[in-house]
Structures are given as structure tokens and as C-alpha cells.
Amino acid sequence: MRVAVFGCGYVGLVTGACLAEVGNHVIGVDIDAERVANLNHGSVPIYEPGLADIVRESIEQQRLHFTTDAAAAIHNADIIFIAVGTPTDTDGSADLRFVLEVAATIGRHMSQETLVVVKSTVPVGTCARVREAIGSQQAQPIPFAVASNPEFLKEGAAIDDFKRPDRIIVGIDQEHALAPLRELYSPFNRNREKLVVMDIPSAELTKYAANAMLATRISFMNEMSQIATRVGADIEQVRIGIGSDPRIGYAFIYPGAGYGGSCFPKDIRALKQTARQHHFEPYLLDAIENVNQSQKRYIFQQIQQHFAGNLQGKHIALWGLAFKPNTDDMREASSRVLMEQLWAAGVHIHAHDPKAMEETRALYGQHPLLTLHDEPYQAAHQADALVVITEWKSFWSPDFARLKQLLKQAVIFDGRNIYSPKQLRQQGFIHYSIGRPHPQSNSADTVLSNNEALAASA
Image 1 (cartoon, rainbow, N blue to C red):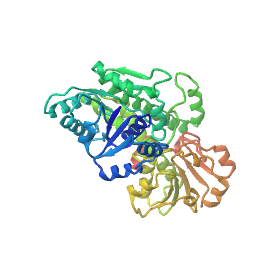
Image 2: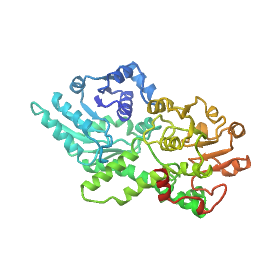
Image 3: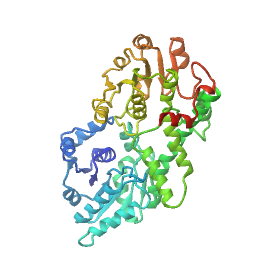
Image 4: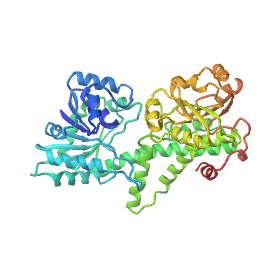
């Protein structure tokens, strides 16, 4: 099939590459001429395991091409995907400017019957606005249909998610729109029926509801971790205890330093705004976000407590900068919250990440209190403590004896609970983690309340 994908960011690039790999002819459209030129030479601007290889192979096989010529792409497409960004607007809602600009462009240049598929994460009612924008720009009436097809790609596992999806959500209001999408997705829909067909508003809401549910589980466990710390319980044992219940399961119940990335924070805010636009107060969504913001500040609270508030001039090693492993994405990353708090307290940070170093340089430039190291043990040399905030596999089994020699003080703040407290105690480390008894005391008196922690770090 002939497919045009508007937007060569994360979602658009993965979508276009995976569709091209199975034999479709795909044109990726973007307004960034430099990005387009780099992509046509096989240079991928994001790190996603396996993506660069698929892009390069599909370009070599002439199944994938990138352009800034929107008109040409529209003329040659049977199906057009809108996969542009929907950043958070000033009021917390999703900014739909780019989606509607693409829709208007499609309307101006459409020359044949076309199916327009909204892949971007958008609030309920957006497909109706896309249809209106296309129709308003047509010089003469040409039939078209609009469908909703939200993405469910996990950064770091997006290729596998696209090729082996749990479900393929399709929202339609015209029956004839289903057949081309069923054909397009047939290579990914072989071992069982994965297409879930519904009305368009339900499909639009499904994306937000899915992310809100996952964020709920994370924030719930993070709140439980705070209770566990205060009562002397071990949240990791609690996690195993509740996860063994099949009604709950183990997915997304790992306590940690808070969630980040391009989806959960943005989508929670947009869903809250949608609710309020329809005169409903989203109390639970507010709580999810508040818990997450508090949790992101918790490691700083631990560091501040350990050093009795005397942080000026300290050197802290930081392992992990990306918001999660297997990506270079630092959007809303917990590392950023922590670094900015530490800098404000006069701390020099020595950081390492397997993939997010360039993104860190792009965000912070030559920050006087930041040194980036190509190797994790270099970052730990003569540091007053080590903080692990992204659970890259290369951090799971370090040489603790070497670390103890390198660190000025044998202190580890384990923001993802990847180390054994017993093992580290035996090797002479002071080990702070999330939701486990503190090394010095189990008393709730040593831990600030959520409100105090927020006030102290504001």
C-alpha cells in the first residue's frame, strides 16, 4: 500500500519504518529539512533499539523515503497517518496546532479518495476537528474518511510493540474505512485477531485511559513505598505479596523515583483538562500527578537528610539520565528534577548514561556543576555518594569492591531498588532505597511528610 506519515518524530518514524519493512511504500513527511536529509541518509535522530537498522534497510530497498514536500506525499498516498506532536499547552491541554495544520494541508492537496488516520495522542473530539479542517480546505469535494488509531508503543521496546501488538485499536464512523486498515495491519495480525474496532470517541479516550491506568499503578506503589518507610515495612516484599494476586499482577507496581517520558505526564494533564472542560473534577488524576511530583523529589530529600543539609561543595555521582532504560529520551526525567535540586544546593554532579549523554548536553550545555563521563566508574571517582536513577542493565551488577574504593564515602542512593540491601550492608555500604527501612533508623521521625518534602524542595 502507499502510505504517507506526517511527522518523523518517535511515533511517526517507528510507524513508517515498520510499515515499510513489511513491503508497503512509505513516505515520511516533516517540516525539518535537516532531519529529512539525515533520515534519507539513514541517520536516525532518536535512540530506539532496532529502529536504525529497519530505516536503513527500507531506504536501501526503496520502500521508505522522507520529504518536506507535503503535496507530493498526499498525492501519492492511499492512507495518510497524522503522527505529529501534541505538546502540553499552557493550560495543560494537548496543543493540537500541528495536527490541525496537517489536516488543513491534506484538504488543500488531496486529489483522490483517501483515508486519514490520526495516530497522534489526541483528546476526544479531535478526529471530528480533523474532518472539519480537511473539508474546509477542499477546493472541490473529494471523498475521504477519518479514523482514530492510537499508538501503544513503549520507548525502548517500540519495534517489538509495533510488530507484535497486544491490540490494535481502530476507531471508525464509516464502515468502508475498516478494510484498508485491516489490510495494512494484516502482517501484524496473524496469530489471533488483534483489531479492536470501536467508535472514534472511544478510541481517542482509550489511549488516555490506558496511560492513566499505568500511571495510577506507579503512583499507587510509590505512595505505598512512603507508607512502608514510615512503618518499617519492605515495599519489595509488599510488591511480591500483592503482585501474586492475579487480579493485580506484577506489571507497573515497581516503586521508584517517579515516572517521566513523553506520554504519562503529558497525557495525565491533557485528560485532566478534558475532564474539566466537561465540568468534571478529576480527583484521582490530580492525585496521580501529585504523588509523582512528590516522588521525584524524594531522593533529594534522602540525600539532604544523610548529609544533614550540608550539601554545598559536595560531589555526587549519578548513574542514569534517560527517563527509562533503552532510550535517550529525557523528557520529564526524574534525573532532571534531582540534578536541578542538587545544583541549587551547590552540588557538583558527575553523570553517566549509556545513551542520553548528547541529549543532556543539548539540554544543559556547559553547566558549571555538571561533568559527563563516558564510563560509569569515572563518574564515581572521589564522589561523596552514588545515585542510581535509571535502571540500565549495565548498572545492575557493578563491581562493588571497586566502587567502594572509588567513592569518597561508601553511600549509594538506589532510586530503582535494583540492589540487595543485605549484600550492600555486608560490603560496608550505606544503602538508601525506595520504601525499605533506612540504614540508620526505621523511625518515621527521620522522614519528612509529603507536604514537608514538597515545601523543602520547592
